[in-house]
Image 1 (cartoon, rainbow, N blue to C red):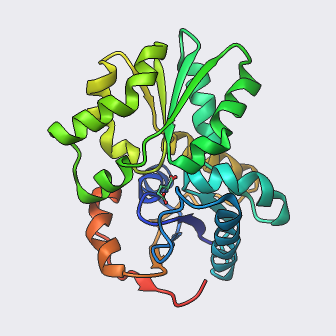
Image 2 (image 1 turned 90 degrees about the horizontal axis):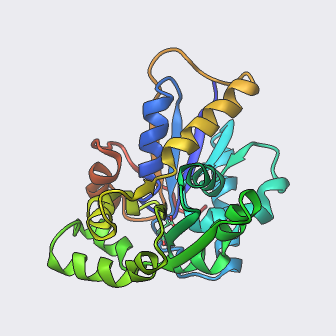
Length: 263
Ligand code: DGL
């Protein structure tokens, strides 16, 4: 059976890969992290689209049966434009997160946090409004959360102060549900909860993404239910850096990371 392809700008997509591995243990996975060009969150839409097409072409060369875009910035900027240009099914992270948030909110006030690109695209806001026109969405970019997660700064005074400043508009708006619209943010759940309060619902779309992938593979008759899948990891630069962070993002050590010279 062919593998599932997963890509992200770097290590963040491993939080999605982790859930795919948990829910689809029989599947082979090929992960590509574009570490030579990370971060995508501050790049223009045109650039993110170009990088995404190159990454998809790389995964297609690995003969994947489905592609999971494990990056919110790519899912926001590129997916709506490129999805219909490829035959292979492509699953992004926005729609699964939106569905869960609309289902979870009790007061119709939803907060969204993400990279500058994701927030600028208004992807979450537009999809939420499509399902529930009455919902009030408050969206803020939290760019410093990405380096915090990569540096392992997940708690402490500095992180707490930054989180308080970023999340102030969400508190002010009285949101009861917050979409973690960036693959790095699940690592910061405890500090976000501390600022937003114990009762806040935090939506981490990885779980819903894996459910969606499973659904599509089942419908297409491509689901691999047996055995234990093999996982391969490719990066466009610095496998050592990727390897150092992989344990925190994936929850297990990653071996045999290969550097590819051009995508
Ligand atoms: N993976 C990106 C995202 O989910 C965050 C890192 C980046 O800016 O490239 O938006």
